[in-house]
Every structure is written in structure tokens, then in C-alpha cells.
Length: 396
Ligand SMILES: *Cc1c(COP(=O)(O)O)cnc(C)c1O
Picture 1 (cartoon, rainbow, N blue to C red):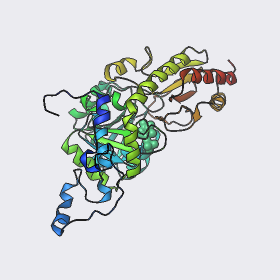
Picture 2: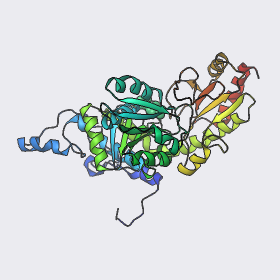
Picture 3: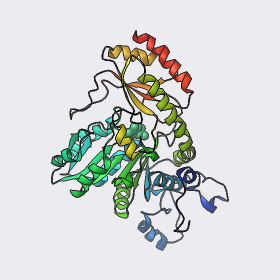
Picture 4: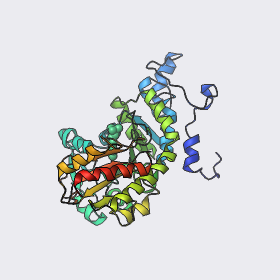
């Protein structure tokens, strides 16, 4: 595209970005290239190959193939970054950049609302390797964040909205504090997907569990790490190669298929999610809905400022009179919502969360039993009818 042409809109880019080009005989999509060994025409070519490890260049299977590259390019487009590293899972997309940016003796700031396995990684492996983690209230102001920085704080991690509790973080303000102290800003942007553009908001490295809406069909685990500068790319790419991070070409091919329809699925799922959340808000059994796109909900103002849309994952807080056993029975009584982890697929899910999330920074008490709902592609009327029927087991 000529320099002076404005960029196409997202729907157009999702159809055209990362096309395979002419090397697949004119087919629209890339082939699945499976392979470990790449043969070199000469020893000189073999010797020079390593110099291309930061490029999309065939060197050895683990460094990527023409099946990986289109997906990398589309995810970089979705996030608004320059380079993307595809890794084996969303969790690997969290742990790989943490290992890339941190070293023994460093201090890390983590939101208290962070995805559980990310917390486990910090408290277990990172601690063992000499990295100290402080958990902060995800709703912290920039001024209150300042005193949490130490001379050795090198990473501010963010996740917005937070896992299970959906706190929206003031990313631009927090990023400014971090950058003034020479720290990098990492963000788990799985919920925001293309609705939050991390690199316009001060993020240095953006993480996606592609497993969710990109794959969209609950059948592949995959992660994406996207950056926006050459220095960040060298840092992340070097760590991914050192760790032997790799994603199966078959899975990349499925994720590439998924991403082509992602914006359309998300439009529908956003609307259905808001409709189901609004319906639940009117129920006497419900104390609060944790969905930043609902006017008046926690985090709504920040969401309106920074996001162009919402995914279909949100929280329900029941009235304090309901017990954990009651909410578990409610979840079991649902027929269209499965009980299960993960989200972003075509099907609806319900997951009671009390007792499964841990907090140490004093945030996270919402005063009642909580349920996380993922709204899929089913008809809203059927979902609300299912929820209404299951409310019967709660006893009014
Ligand atoms: C699911 C999830 C991950 C991890 O993704 P996997 O592919 O399941 O490993 C990371 N962060 C968030 C916010 C998630 O919801």
C-alpha cells in the first residue's frame, strides 16, 4: 500500500492481512508446512542462516514456517504492533516475555486481579529464580502506584479488565509512571483483543491467549506476543527461541482460519453478552454485574475512554444471601452454559469463581458469590430462558 493511503479498517485488514502470496500456487490460504529440517544449498548459506533469526526466514522448523508467518502478521495487525511471536499457549505468551524482560534481582509489579496461572508463575518459578513480585490493587491510581516502585522494578504487568473480576485499569496513566522509572509495561490484552490498542496506550509488549476469540472454536491452544519496536522484538524473540517455544503448524493454520471471522463473531458476542448481562442486572437474585460496557458498572468510564468494544466474558455477583453450594447448584442446573474454564469459543460457559481465585492486595471482595459467564453464539432468548429456569434452584 502506498505511504499516503490511510490504513484499511479492521474488518478489511482481517480479510487481507497475512495472505500467503504467490508461493502457494494462487490459493488464498497458506498450506500447512510441517517440518524440522530445512536443507541448505551450501555451507555458506548454512553459516549465514542464524543472522536471519529475527526475520520471517526459513532456518529450522522451530524458528517458524510459511504457515506461522501469516498468523504472526495478522495478530500484529490486530494488536497494532510490528512483530508477533506465536507460542504454544496463552500461558506461554505470559511466561515467555516475563522471562525475557526480567532477571535475578529484579522486582515485578503485578495486578492483584491477574489470571491465576500468571500469579502461580510469579510465586513459584520467578521467585525461585530471584525475582520479587508485589501485587497491587488493579484500580490503583498513578499517584498511588509511584511508591510501589523500587530502584530494581523493571516490569509493570497489567491485565485489563482483570480475570474473573473485570477491573479496568488506567493503562496510559500507569504506563507513564512505569516509563518514567525505566520499567517496561506488559499487558495481558486477551479480553480487549482488537477493542484495545495497546501500543497507543503506552504498552511495550502485548499478550494474547489466541486460544480464546482468535481460535474461536474451543479446539486449539495458542498464544501471541506482540511488540512495536525492534529492541522489544529482539528481547522477546531471543527468549522464545532460547526456551524452545513453538506452535504446531496445524494449530497456526486453524487459528488463521479463526481470525478471518473473529470480528464478526465478536460483534455478535459483544451484543449478546451485553444483552444477557443487562437481563441479569434486572434480576432480584443479582447484586451486581461486573461488565465494563454496562453504563454505571465499575470501570465503565475508563472502558468508554480506552476501548472500542467489549468481549462477551463478564461476572455476576449474587446477593449475599446465596451460598456457594446454591451458586454451584445454579451452574449445574444450566443446560446451555457448560461448566468449564477458558472462553472465546462459540459456546456459552458458566464458572463459579469463589474459592478459585486468590488475592493478596486487599482487592477482590465483591460481597457475594461470583459466577463468570461467557456468552457464545446461541440465541440470547434461549440463554436468558435457561438462566431464568436455573434461578429456580436458588429459591428466589
Ligand atoms: C486463558 C487465559 C490465558 C491463558 O491461555 P491458555 O491458552 O489457556 O494458556 C492467559 N490470560 C488470560 C487472561 C486468559 O483468560
